[in-house]
Length: 111
Image (cartoon, rainbow, N blue to C red; front, side, top):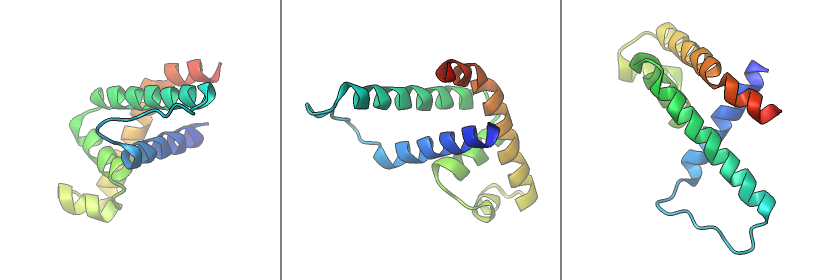
């Protein structure tokens, strides 16, 4: 369940990054189901963003670089001045903390 959750969150974050526009327009031909899916995705992304605020800066920094900016561990290590192993550990810890923070929301969605 944890791996699936993190892959889903990562993909949603990458999709959001790709699709972000100054003003999102909804076409008249969108079905209610499409609109609901879009709103659910936005709610989840908002929950992830809010959850990230509760994670310490050093963990949040590497998580954002890894999943929002799709950087490799080597690139993140060069930016932060930390070793690759430290970066990997921080990314893992950030995911674990986010999983814990978002667990109530995930349970609600799955019900």
